Structures are given as C-alpha cells and as structure tokens.
Length: 226
Length: 226
DNA sequence: TCAAAAGTGTTAATAGTACACCCATGA
DNA sequence: TCATGGGTGTACTATTAACACTTTTGA
Image 1 (cartoon, rainbow over the protein chains, first blue to last red):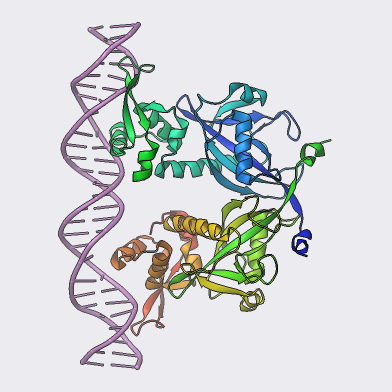
Image 2: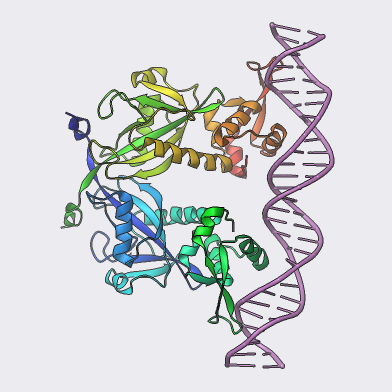
C-alpha cells in the first residue's frame, strides 16, 4: 500500500510570508503589520498565512497578498523556503517567502487598516519577528538583481510615469545615485518605454513628459538594462 | 492558549530534493536514481527525502546528500520550494530543492550503488518523475548565474586542476566555447588561483601546470568573473 | 525675474572580443 | 619527426562613465 512510503514521516505547518514593496516619497517601503495576536503580539511582522490543503504554495502567497491589499495579478517572486527548527518559537513552521511589487496608489486602504498594516521605509525598519529580517534582506537583494535585468520595476509605478520618477525608483532600488543623461540614454534605447502626449505638472512648473511601458512590445524585444 | 492560532491549519509532508552536479568527460552530469519503490517505481528521479522533526530543511538536504554520496561540507544552495497541489500524485508533498556541486572523484561508490544511482549527462537526461525536470532546469540556470560571479565551480574539480580543465568546466556550465587566451587572461588576474609546482601528464605529453584555488586569499579579494 | 525641475551630446576610459603561432614531449 | 595538447600578446570594438548648460513656466 503506497501510503506506507509517506506515513512514517512527520508533517509540518507550512506558511507563506510576503515582502510587499512599494515606492513612496522617493524610497522603497515595505508594508508591515503590527501583530494583533500571539505569538509576538504587538511586534512587527511581514504579512503571512498558512498554506491550505487545496492550494499550491504560490497560490497561498497570492491569497495572502490579496487578503491584505485587495490586489490580484501582482508581480511576485519566490524568495525561498525558511526551515530552521526554531524559527517560530510557538510551533515548528516552515515558511516560504515571496516578494511582491505593488503600486502604492492601488491598494485597498480599508483592508490594510483592518490588518493594522503600515508602510515602513526599507532603510529604517522596525525590529521584525522571527527570521523576517533575513527574508527581507534576501528579497531585497533578489529584487535588486532582477530589477537590473528585467523590467519589473514598472510594477512599483503608476501606469504613466515621468523619467525622473523612474530614475528615482532605480536609485532607491540600487541604493546609489545615477547619472541623469546616461539613465535617459538607456531608457531611450528601450523602444517599449513609450512617450505619451500627457505631462505631469505636480512636481514642476514646466511639467514632465509622462511615459508608459508597453508590455507586448517588450515581449518581442526582451532587452532590458538599467 | 497559543496553539489555537496554529491548530486549525493543515500540515504537510515536506521533502527535499537534491540536484547533484558533477563534472565528467568534459560535461556536466547529474547523479540520478532509478526509483526502487513506489510511487513511480523504475522511473528516474532526483535524490530526495523527507524533512524530519528535529532538523532544519537545510540540514535535511545535507543529510540526504550525505546518505547518497558520503560527502559532507559540500557547496549547496537552495533552488526554491515546489508546492503545486498535485506535484506528487501519491500524496500532497511540498518539496524544497537544493543543488550541490561535488567532485566526481570523491563520492562513496558503494552508497551510490546501493541507492541505484547513476550519472547522467545533463543534456541527455532521461525522463524524470513529478516536477523534477523543472527543479533541474531552475537549478542549472541558478548555478550558471552564480558560477559566473562567484568561484563555486572549483567544487566540481579536484583540489589541483589544469587551466584546460577549468576552461572545459566553464564551457560546460555556459554551454558555449570560450577563447583560450581571454580565459587565461582572466584567470591570471585572479591572484587566488595559484600555480603549483606540479604538472598533470594524463592528457598531454608535455604536461599541464596544475593550479589550486586559495580560499582564504579569495575572501580578502572577493572578485571573480569568468 | 527667478527659482526649480526638465531636458539634452560629447569625450575619455574601460572592458570585452577576435585572432595565430611557437613550445615541449613521448610515442 | 611528428602529432598532440600547452602556453602566450596585441589590436580592435563596444560599452560604460564622466561631465554642464539651456529650457520652460508659475509664483
């Protein structure tokens, strides 16, 4: 009987934790929650949840993100599994971390408030429970690598954005300033970053041209480097 | 009572699977086993095992590798968690994949034979069970990226190696031929790749100089690019 | 009229790529 | 003596990095 092969092995709670990146005030931010229940009530943590019987681990991460933000079809990537025996002092829980990139204009304010979640500057994080800071650091590094070679950064911006916004985003991701002319030269080479007719006047009197990312065009070209 | 927070959630079998790379006959090979038990008896698979109560997921991967090869202190890196509901048709199992780089001169032949394991050229793999081919492809890509920016390739070679061996290794990793002089120029710039007094005469009458990788020196410099 | 952000090219330095011959040795 | 793999340097090309001024406009 085939079950015998499995049955002598232990089972574990499996959780997912979401590192939710947003771009606010020229900086990368994370959406964190102040836990309202044990263990570690009152401390800060990533949004998480347990994998259920009928869902894949990836789907659990999507569900957890949806529960907090109301958002679907969000760019998400797995960071990895975190399986230290004592990582959660309450019970043995193996957690799979995912990072998500969201546009801070889009999420559901009421849901976020209900969960007691708040944005925190990624360079001024409060103390996090368990191994969440390790997850964050790995996610940040992974995202940085990915953002330099694939156009995932646009998920953090409105559909239309100025080149200054885009540059500030990449400066936040890389943690270093970039040369404006070199940056714009590279953007100009990417034909799928298209100029619109619209301008944005919120940050200057002159107004800045708004651009947009053409996903279909990118899929034909598939060249990206910032 | 804090257990209530966990108790209404399901538990899962958690497995680890090892993508074991070796460098044989100028090609990358994987150590695969022909399963001697259900499910999928007679089919080829990665070496795997279940995470136990008292061990971390990382430790489970190390244990599984040790069980098959007799090797410890091997370079291993996590590939990720694979959590599709139906990935194992026998039972719901969430698996965390790891890749390992071993020197094919070192492993324990008897253990490998006992497990009915064999080397297979990575470009001519037999059909693998479940989602193992996905794990292999992800591991290969990850390893390729890593090998280009960190000196992990040396784990696949004997402690002393010729530059021709090293070049053939990287050609196998990248899947493309490299220019001999450019390759050697780059190696020469890495001061922690040290020439020894010994030569290897197995592949030429003239004999080729043997080199070695000085780990401590690398840790001071931390620059690598091949 | 002036402050504040938008926009725009050229040059120098560096890194990467292409390429062909002599050397040492054992069979 | 010759077949085989080991070992070496230079010129060209492409990429990246450094750098400063003019434009527009609302207050």
